[in-house]
Image 1 (tube, helix red, strand yellow):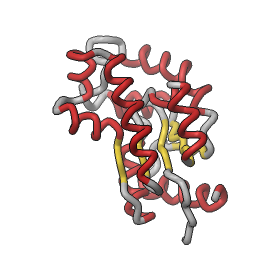
Image 2 (cartoon, rainbow, N blue to C red):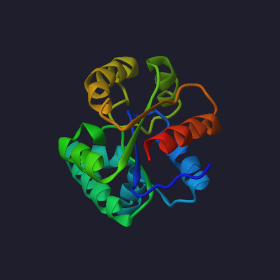
Image 3 (spheres, rainbow, N blue to C red):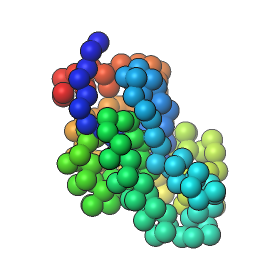
Image 4 (cartoon, helix red, strand yellow):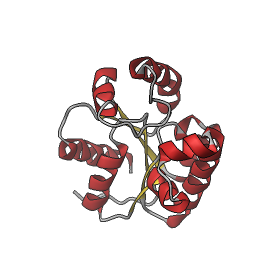
Length: 174
């Protein structure tokens, strides 16, 4: 399937929606460079995201994330996986809507809860009721994420199937 992509592709969604996993596979399929904003921040800071939250604070992290997203969107036709809350930032959301094709990966709460419960690397989830935090994130962020150009259910399907769904939607969109 030939798709003429002329803008960056940005994967958005709450934590645990599969942005990094799907982004890597999509980039390989489209022969595009892949960036993960969280990974770029970790490399530059020399700390894991959860440690940046703990030592430098959420505001510091969000400023770094916004800066990285702005930078990477200037790299051309790439694929960018963003942090879970980045699309909630109005400036970042507007920039993505203007400069890129946004793809919202969504899933039901049970699937996302199962995914995020596997690790303790998610900021804001250690020592709290993860399900309550997740419910709150969904309530706050799903109405904003609805603004994405393309919506893809990233539930329990195989990652390759999800990527194929994205390719079909991208072909229709482009």
